[in-house]
Amino acid sequence: MVQELTLKHFILKQRVVNLYRQAVRACRTIPDLQTRKETLTWIRSEFDRNRHLHDTDLIEDKLSAGHRELRRSLPGMRFT
Image (cartoon, rainbow, N blue to C red; front, side, top):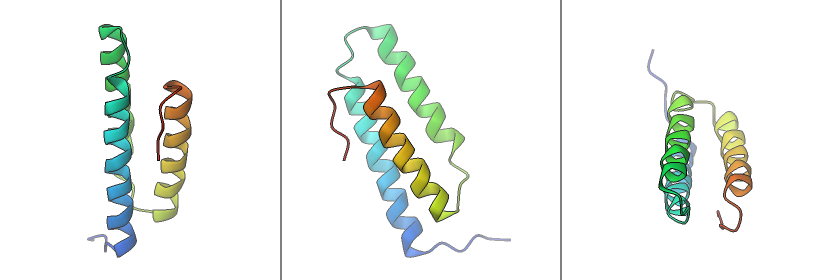
């Protein structure tokens, strides 16, 4: 059975991609190379772990949680 994608799915996908880009850019400010690599690995694993989601409400909840977690983990960075 093929999941039917709606306009909301495409909008949420773009928001997820934007959050990922912001997170990767924010990691550039981490001075310690090893910590930066570990943080990037953690970010990548979180996005990969949630790649299978199709429920738009759940995706929106995960996006909100992702914003909060990145603000907490990388203080001083602005995530829109």
